Length: 383
Image (cartoon, rainbow, N blue to C red; front, side, top):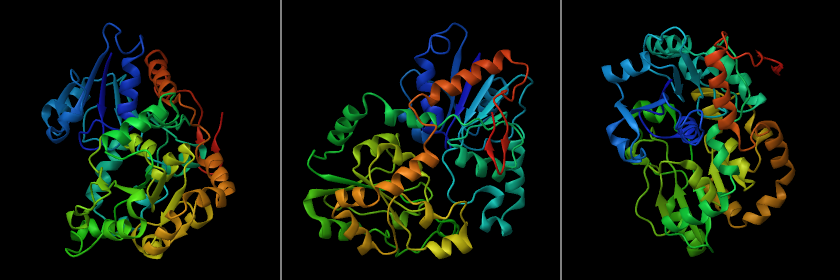
C-alpha cells in the first residue's frame, strides 16, 4: 500500500503530519512490509521533514505521478488535478473548524475567480471522505464544499498531541528552546489573514494590530509574546526585534506553541477550537468585526455568542485582559465549558487511530466512502 501525504504547499505539518507520525508507530502501517509513505514537499520546508522521509517535489510531474499511483491520499488542502485511479481512497482532513465562511460560501467569492473555484470544486469530486472535527464543525464543512460523501466526526489527528501524556514535558521543552523561563506568562498571538490585505499587498506602513512594542511596554518582563502569523499576512505586517517577543510563524508544529502558551489571542482563526483543548484562556481581538463579517468573509457562527472568552475591539482592552490571566479563566469558565462541549467533544487523544482505522477499512470495504454514517446539513452526524 502506498500512502501519499500533502500539507499546505509542501510543508510537514497539520493533520497529515499527525497521521503519518502515528502510522509509523503502528505495526499494520509503519513498519509493515509493502507499506510506502511519500510526501509532496517544497524545497523551502525540506528541513522540517524527518530524516529518511520519502519526498517528491510539490508542483511537478513527479508529484502528479505519486498521486496517481497512490492507494491512499491524505491532504489538508486542495490538490492540483490528478487522475485518481480506481480503488484509491482520498482522505481530506481539511485544516480547522470554520468560523469564517470558506470556499463558495465566503462573501468575497461572489466576485471571485470562477476558474479557481471550479478547479477547487474539481478536487472535491475526488474526495472519498472529509473529516469532521466535531458535529458542529462538520456541518459547515460539508455545506461549504457541497460534498456528498461521508463526514465522520473523528476529531482532528493534529490535536492528539495536546492531550498526550507527555504534553507537560513538551511544554517545558518548547519554552526552553524558545528561551522563555518558567515564570513568564506566555501570550500566543495567532490571527488569521485578511483577504483584502492579501489582494492589495497590504499597507506598507501597517503595523500589527496587537503592537509588540506596546505589549512589551505595558506588560513588561513578566510576559512573553509569541507571534504566529499566517503565511498570507503581508511582510509589511511582520513584527520587529522587540525584547520578549518571538516570531514563531515558521515553527513547524503549532501544537508546541499551544502547549508553551498560557493564553491565546486570536480573531477569526480556527486556532481557538484547537487551543480550547488546553483549558487555557482565549481572547478574541476583533478590531474589524463588522467589516470582516459583512464584507470580507462572513461567519458560520456568531462569535460574540459562542466565544469562550472576551471579544474585544481595541489593543488596549486586550492588554487590560492579559494583565490578569487567572481572572480571565474564572470569569469565562462557564462559557468555556459550553464552547468545549460544542466544538471539542470528539477530541480524546485518539483521533489519528480512528482515521487510520477508517483508511485500513477502506482497503477491504467495497464502499470507498466509509460506511460510517451520513451527514445531514441541519441535523449533524447520524449513526
